[in-house]
Image (cartoon, rainbow, N blue to C red; front, top):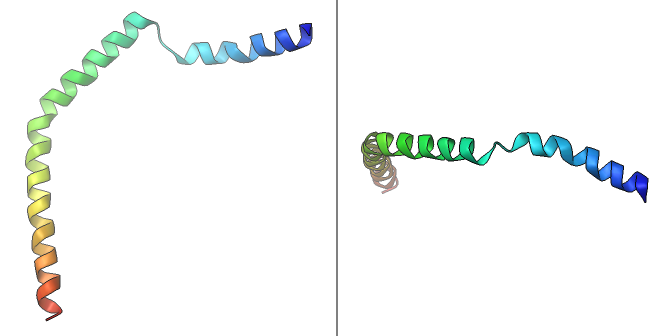
Length: 66
């Protein structure tokens, strides 16, 4: 049973290193939110342009099948 305890204890230590402390995690989340807000205008323009281009491609394909 003692061997099992040590196995579990030492195998969980690397997992703890992957998770940052909460104060660092909150900073990370705030940074991601700000980045998403600042890129949303550009992303909306790109999505609108891609949607228009895709509809043109589909129109060309449908016209060529007639």
